[in-house]
Image (tube, rainbow, N blue to C red; front, side, top):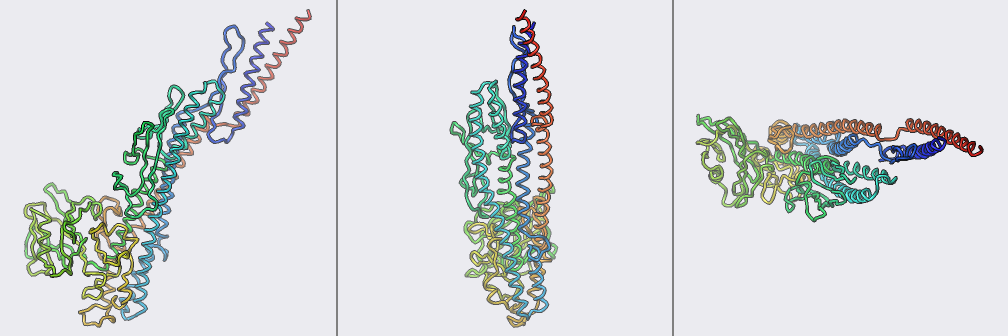
Length: 632
């Protein structure tokens, strides 16, 4: 009996000592990132042996809490980058109402036009208009440059994040190999598993992942969409073909030969390649946020600024033409004055089929033969049917005739419509009637009234005050040689010809007023064109909140741009705050189940010390009994 007590006490001491070691290790690792609380599970001793055996050291891991933690980590990384970048984007426009903000600079320009209209002979007022116009062009260009700087920064971040994700996958493959080669009772195994879980959590901040534990103790890693990135010790290698500094023309395409930005390619151990962006494999994490910002959010912001710059320029040089119902009683169409039609001056016809469904036909003139193919997304309405056609320049030799324009439109529309002149109307007026096709509901166009950047003293109120600074040419929205609109916000500039002849701001020939003295007609007309005339802005700008063109004045469009970006930044911050709470909750849940609670561990340590002392007393009593027996 004494021997049994001796054996039991000895075994109890060994187990208690091992448990004290585990608790001490837990206490020593309080606050250590990635450390999972250790446990020791004593087991019954073998047959014929009394007491307990030490057992195996394990981890108190809550798999469900860990899975949620990784999911929330991905979400927090996504919302964090979105909120940060959207806030930076909103900052580019300045604080609404400040004199240096986009709306403040625009208001200063319109105010200078009003001042000049009230005092057209003032050289100081003319100089103020030119200075304010230059400030506005610079402010728009600065914001657009900031947008592209943000895109370029995200391109660099994607390269760094891709390298980090690839390195983490390689690290996980090595850890899998070591864990599989380590027995379950090896005390180093929990440390290896901690390192692996920490690497998985780090990876989840970059990419949304699912980690699947295999029967041999290794894990496989898949993206949230199901693409395998790691299978036991076989890891895919991730690469990113960074393009450096991005321009407004550098856009993403599923076709690598057409894409102007980098993409992420996963190369499997067998040599297979998967384009993770083209396949939509990455849906959360900082990489998903960077891709969405680079390819969707920021290009839309650039489009808003391009549309603003184009609207500003064309408000100075174009006339908005709106189709009117024929006054002679003719039914089924509209009369519209297209005098001065230039390449890029889109003619929008709204048609309605028998079911009541409306859609837009956009007729786009070009000086090229054949005219270039134009995607609908590059026009005002991404859902429209685009019909390009060829015309000659307004200043062509011999002179272009109205019949040429009508013939070109007739050929472009094809059957179902008739195009003719307007009896008693302007020479350039066109009558478009439905003759069996879809019913015409509306017709509109923005028609350039000046022939070139040098045409600054015509009889019309329009003047090319803003030009395409890259070539000092008139902006018409042409697609000849590529979209003139794309990146125009970075190129808009005050026309140097107008700067050299400030009197042209008020000098209109043919009015009986000497050129250079003038009256307030032109600056007043320009002010009205900016603040009162409704223009069409593209659906791609997203200002209306729906996938349809926006009709507003240039002044209202400026406010719309600032309002949309401000609201988006605020919404992103709110979402990030909510996601931060969700992540904190997941961290708390995981910590309560798998983390080290110092109070609990100290209580365990006290209990183990008491158990150790009790076993020691039993051992002492058993020894005394044996000594007594030996002395008998």
